[in-house]
Every structure is written in structure tokens, then in C-alpha cells.
Image 1 (cartoon, protein in one colour):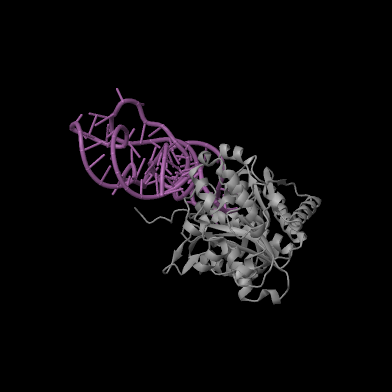
Image 2 (image 1 turned 90 degrees about the vertical axis):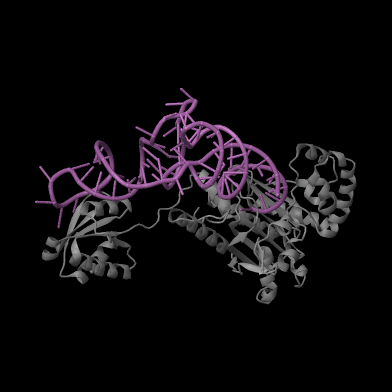
Length: 420
RNA sequence: GCGAGCAUAGCUCAGUUGGCAGAGCAUCAGAUUGUGGCUCUGAGGGUCACGGGUUCGAGCCCCGUUGCUCGCCCCA
């Protein structure tokens, strides 16, 4: 058996890479319109960063990390912890008090691949660090909503919740545990384990029986401080006024430990079982937790592959890629040298051109020109070279025009003019 | 980590009860000497995932392995 690509990775071939670049360009532009600036961080970090940032008990850290060199380093499984590490390390708070950063990078998680889930995948994400203003939440959420509408994505559910701070959650979790203990024998094995390790996660169970039990369970919202509730109400009002359709989901909790206060998630029915396009929330304790000054922050991450899956399903109209302007059909050595000189001049001016390198027949060269979508074909034959008179064939409508010239430089100049 | 399904040409897939390995698309070439698309003709391309077993004979039946896909968990 030949060597194959690692499980859960993809080759992005030319026909797809232009699509991907289109999406990336669009996302960059979007982020920049909101005045987010790009940040790039290393592909791998000290393993400790993720353990402390994301949480030792999370699934990602406990079983999905690509770690190496005696566990010293790990390929980044998510981007928030690295961004915050960089923020602290480079003293970005001194550059301006609010840092609005975006990224487009590959992440790595050792999971079983399935529809919309890969071991190497790309995320577009934004992080706003340094303000607890509810309008930052609203702006960031509306950026996400704008992203969806820019790509013409409907058919989604925008879920928002607030989960408070660790302190606020503590009393709730006690009560939740007590409540769930009554139903201990009805809970799944996973949930019983979570009862000790991470009871919050039980809230987003998908088992009907457990959902039923949770209907009468304590509600986290009731345990939150008035300020947290006010923040949430303000976010909701602001988000509504910006035209975002959302629904509140008190059971929405997320798999990373750093989240506090506002959390949100967008689900699409055009995806498989892995139906989240993007998700995020506030993480007001993370900067401090990683050794910086206490600094509020919020962010979200969007999966590019999932985004593209949805676009594919919706027959998203990707723009045509730039095609060849001039194709030179050649015959013999003199013709080929003449052509390549002209092509050199055309390329100086940024005009895309191509010729035959396989010594194929005229007919085959014409077929090739047609196949690659060349707009114009010029045959450089013996007669043409003798007369210095060439026909330019328009491949769209089969019309031909002719140019006379004094030599290759002159012809190149004339073709450049026609090109404009 | 667990469960299910699938594996035949570059791609999508047929292949009957176990009896010579197939089609469409794609690729390449040709259809009176130097002109694309449409049409027609032809060609190349296979360790039937791999290894074993049953059988006179296996793409087909049995066992194992690997890979892929979908799902669980979790996430984007």
C-alpha cells in the first residue's frame, strides 16, 4: 500500500484552493471592517498553556491533544489560549487598552473524523481583549451574524446564554448536583462521571430522559449576580437592535473551562451531526489565569471546513478564478522561442498566458486552450512569422482579428494594449 | 476510546447461482496536410484494498488485517 495522508487531514487541490482563498479573503475583509487586526502565533505551544488555559478535565486537553517531545509541546487545538499568551507576552495591553484581534489558522485535535470534523482543521476567529462593555459582546456577535449573511447562510439557529463566573456557578452546581443525585440511577454513565468532574456539562446532554429530568432542575440564571444578569440583558437588547435573530438557551454550556458570562453558538441544519458552525463567549478570567493582569475578553471561532460544507450545499456562487488571457499555439522551435519571449513581456504586465510544452498538434493545442478556458488564442506559425501578421482568435465567440507588427517586442506591446 | 456500514479503472458505479474484468464520465489520439466546443471512431488505464481459507474454479462464500465513511463522546 502506498503512503496515504494521515487520517482526518485533507489535500486542498487547485479547484478547491481557489474557493478556500475566496472565503479566507472575505473573512479577513469582514474582520478588518470591524477593525480587528490579524494575529499569527506558532503552530505549536508549550503543552502547559493548554492545560492551564482550556482546563485539564476538558475532553480536548485530556484526550485529543497532539503532544510531542516528552509532552513539552502540543500542536494548538484551539486559538484563544495562544492569543492570550501572546497578548501577555508582548504586553499588548500597553499598545491600546482594547485589543481586537482575528486569526485564520489550522488547529489539531486527535478525534475520530466524521462529517465536518477533522484532525487538522481551519478556524477563523476573533478575540476582543480589554473591555467588559456589553457592546463589545454585541459587536462581536453581530460580526458573526454579518459573516453568515455575507455568505448567504440561512437555516441556522443562533443560541445565546450566560453562564456567570466560577464563583456564581459554585452555588448553582451544588444545588444541581443535589438535584441530580435524586435521579442518579436514571443518568447515563457519562453523566454520572460528570457529576463529579464537570456537572455543568450535563446540562447539554442529548438524551431525552436526561433532558426530561433537567426540565425541573435548578436554573443557572437564577443564581447569577444582578450585574451579570444586567450585562446579559443589555447584550440581548443590543444584539436585537442590530438585527440578529437569536434564541436564549439556558442549557447552552461549552466544553472549555475558561468561559464566563456570555456564551453563544450557531447551529446549522445543513451540517451532519457536528452541526456547530461557530461558537464562543466571554472569558473574563483567562488573562489572569495565564499570568496577566485581570482583563476581560470575549471571542469566537468558526470552522472553515464546516462553513464550506454549508456553502457547498447551498450552491454558493464562487467567483470564477482568473483564467488565461492568451494561449500561444506554437509549431516548431522558432515559434516556441518567439512565443515565450512575448509571454515574458505579457507577464511583466500581469497578463496570464500559457503555451504548449508537449509538442502537441495544433488541434490538441486548441483543445487544451479551450479546456483551460483561455480567452484568446494566437497561432504562431511559419506564415505568420514570415509576414509578421498574426490572428487573434476569441474563444468565446470564435471571431478573429489580426495584428501586424515588426517583431516580438512590438507584438507584445500591441497585445498588452488589446488586453486593456 | 466505542458502535455501524463500505472497499471493483483517475471519478461515479454495474458485475446474475461461484465460470474469460465491464459501463458512463475523465484522459489521450484520429475523422483528406494549420484551428477548440457538438458528434463519431479508437486507445491507454485493474494485484477486484491486503493476507489467508473453502472450491476443479473466488470480484462474488468464510476468517483476519488495513483503509475510508457515518455515528457516539466532544467540538469548529
